[in-house]
Amino acid sequence: MSTDILKRVKGYFEEAVQAPAYRTWLADAKKAWAFYDGEQWTADEVQKLEEYGQAPIVINKIAPKVDNVAGTEIASRTRIIYRSRSGEAGEEETAKALSDLALYVAERSEQAIELSNMFKAGLITGVAWLDVGIEDGEEGAVVFNRYENEMQVVWDSAATRQDYSDARFVCRERWLDEEEVKRLFPETADSLLSTTSAEERTRFGARPLGEDVIYFNSDRKLWRVIEVQYKQTEKLYRVRTVTGEPVLTFDKAEARQINAEDTLDVTYAPRVHVAYYSGNVLLGHEPLPYLHNRFTLIPYLFKRDRKTGAPYGLVRTAIDPQRELNKRRSKAMHLLNTAQVIADVDAVDDPDMLAREAARPDGMILKRPGKDLRIIRNTDLAASQVSVMEKAALDIQEVMGVFDEAIGRHTNATSGVAIQTRQMASNTNQMFAFDALRRTKKMLGLTVLALIRQYFTNEMTIQITDNLSAPRLVRLNQPLRDEQGNTMLRDDGKPVILNDVRTGIFDIHVEEVTDALSSRELELSQLQLLMQAGVPVPPQMLVEASTLRNKEQLIRELDGQAQPSASKPL
Image 1 (cartoon, rainbow, N blue to C red):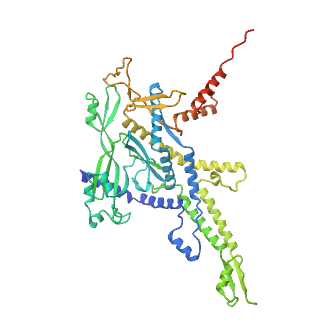
Image 2: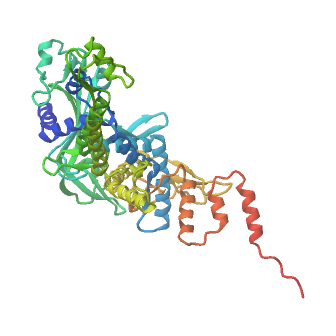
Image 3: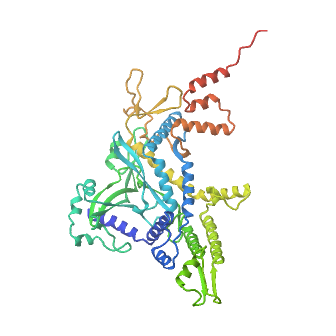
């Protein structure tokens, strides 16, 4: 059994890393990051420039434009909330509590920062990943959101959907030392570490990407451990509880335990498993413990090449004009700093001195009478190089769709209308990037909701600061009690639970609202939007939703002004 699993997951990974689409993407992604970081000359180009006496000048036009789009996301961050579609009061209350719980999860895991890092990486390379799961914390289960280095993720290149929902697998690699291998895989580490000879290690592969895959770095004593999340078709049992709620499970015994009298409805569905291996050793294998039954790695996909399927980012189209700009600037500076000398052989006593003085703007040259000596400056040639360079700079703006007006640079646009038009064009071009981000956030919201419903099953109390001096406490998973303090029971004998996040009795959809640090700030922003729409919002409500320190006194004064004065007797 383990041999078949190893063969399967190893085949997935090695198939993926050698796929033409992945290899094309990997090469382009490394180049894109290099250009963003300012490494825009190859080693051969730098060597040739040194031979000609030219400087490898870099005028990085790409990085500010990428930062502008990434900064726009930071400046207009949104968060995910949950609402009940039914509109039922109890479900609405639970949905509000879940929204606050999701905000708590986001703040604990630095979700906004991790999303921004993922978004920026996706703009540069075309694809980026966010890892979402559960880890043990001091207070119990903690939901984590982490931007995953896209260079360490390998995916099913045969997947065609934008969200990779049709992918058979997704892989992640880690280079681990001996201590880390023992800590993470205590039961199987010895099988891997016992392969101590160089021959056994090179059997795992010692040739570059595209041939055999390397699993051991002998210089650094590191093992390449591969995590493979993959789908396997299994029987899915559908059963109803005593109260009629549908439950889906891959465990037949669990289905019988839920309702032994109900007839099991059996279908087949893909189930996500996770396996770890290195070389020829399977280190671990199990069904993914999360009930949402999706990959933990959530993708952000900017664009894909229609022919090869390889993702690409905002940088790819700007690489050629950026190269052109750098080369023209380097050539122009070289022409401005050099000069040609045409002279008779014996025009001067020292030719070396002539070369030095001719290169100086304040040089002094003494020539023999009657001898020809001309110094030709390359100003016209330099001007032509600058003209081409300026055209390359405009090309970068056009191919990236981010114009200089959008990043606050002075341009040739003189009228306010022209400046506004170019700014709007930049915003329109960015819509595709933000639309893809919205899809990723929706997947994140569904995943976080599923994790909350699976792991946050104990009684919880959330404080919602939407009242003045007495914050409202919303309780989750709390058994209801009658006036005598006895636990209220359902028809099946189980306790009635208030705001039970584990059950599917309410229908929740995901939407995005402006990010806020608390529920109070969120409601204040919504009240302001209502005022802008012409809704007569009482001033007391605005003050109540604010974070002013002395707002109680202010509200009392507003209430006093609102009271009608007593009519005087005639």
